[in-house]
Image (cartoon, rainbow, N blue to C red; front, side, top):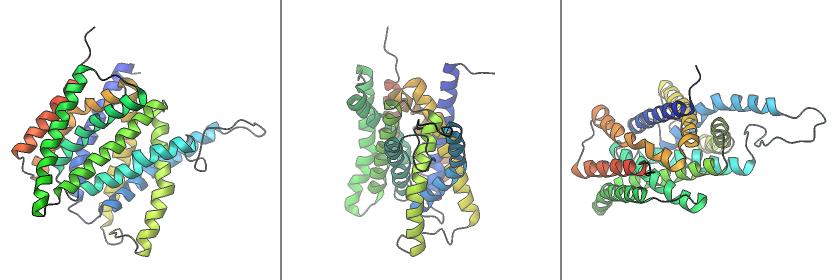
Length: 317
């Protein structure tokens, strides 16, 4: 049975929200185990590459010109990426390498409850501003009110941890990393819209870029002892879990569903549909990680959620 465009968009939104919510809880839990942040980013890319690189090779093989044909396909990176090199590099830097490095590093400083507010909360803010500047999208009154609530919520959570920095606390570092990761994903989101990228091709392209850039560089640095790593001592079960969950789940499945959602709802509304992510991930942090829920976190969570809901209000016609 073929889904209607509306049903397809809603299904993609639900899958994306569920994976993103669990991603925050799992990533924070991973910080308490053997692997370091860049180890997890490395395994994430390896896991995604095992699925997407063969897919991309098959996709480009089907589009290769026949012998004697002078037309060129828009591929790059030795035929692994189905997109031109410039688009592949930009999308890969923001949507894969930098996002993974910043996000996983943040979980080693700040609790999942902070990530549940600051990453999905900052994402609509950055995306709205970038879409306004790059795509010339309009900022409606409702959206401005929503963004104001999001800013207040982020300040309530991030500001509290920043004040504790004077006492030697390091949570603010994680908060800053979370917001930076959200900015990188917002850049990728707007790139998808600006270049009208097809979901599968975009996800294959960013993974191909990460596989030919970050993976060899980090692999050599880790092997030579230039970068700290626990890949040689971590249990094989943990590494396999990270490769499958972070790679196949967070990259392949949610990457495709997120791009489908962008094509159906647009970049700003897509990110604002993730209003359920802060609440679900914060609840998961309390239930599964036994994290406390302070008043400033509750306030920030409420403001961010309200801000996202304001942003998805349809204008009256």
